Length: 351
Image (tube, rainbow, N blue to C red; front, top):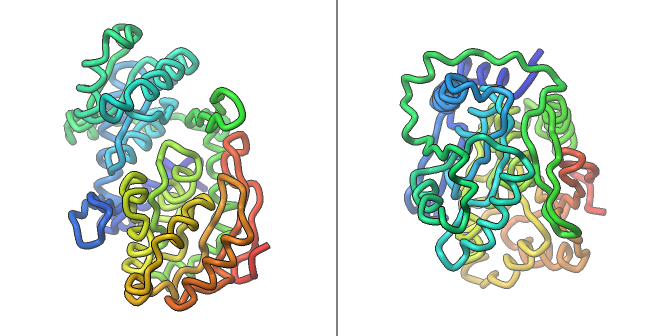
């Protein structure tokens, strides 16, 4: 029986090393550049990151993860879990105009989480180096670009002694009602919530086979609990394929979301209510003509108030593309409960 997602990743890498774990649409477009990583490669990169952390005596400490959208985050997050290091997902600095807010949040994370290392991409670590005057706390913490950790490091990885009560990561609340607070999520919490998501959203072995292991499409930020514990980690929990692209690319052209659902035909995809509103706003007759949403079985809607009028208009508009009202899946969750708290029944009309 699996004790953690680390055990499940190891099993998937052994049984199906060549299966795609994650697919990333670099431009947000299905016909643009695409990067992917197999389960075998994901396990190798995760173990390389884990070994690097272990060799520096960081097991049991906390690591802040600052990554732009892409595949590197997945290896770093699972690398922390594989090392017995507590991961702390954060928001990376993104351009000078938006640095202040990201730096303020990073400063709060560093103080609250008492992290000993920051993991990021070369781009992020370079940006942090440029902001040393605004973030003097950086002088007391190591900043590492995980792309620079060699694959060969994986050979020295040691399996951590994890239990259900071991803390896997700190999930900071959204801060919508107060200052963000760090929730200690254990490996047991993760496995239990993944089990509930799997059961409630109908991710059965039969469905996985029917969909050819293509289970998710997501543009959700991976530092947020809905994006992380939903598509990212449920994919590893089940050994399926998830397709991702950047939240910014979705906001720039909301039609990219349904284009990806139509192209990859996943079982599950979703977002907050505003995402459905944006999709409606950009639903031209030409766009509808090119969509096939008939295989979409779970269109989850959460993270903010769910509007009945939005669900009704979405069904009416996209029925022409094969969308079924029964696919709508209003749900509620929060970081303090790991993620999902309540949701509907698959194949039943939305409540």
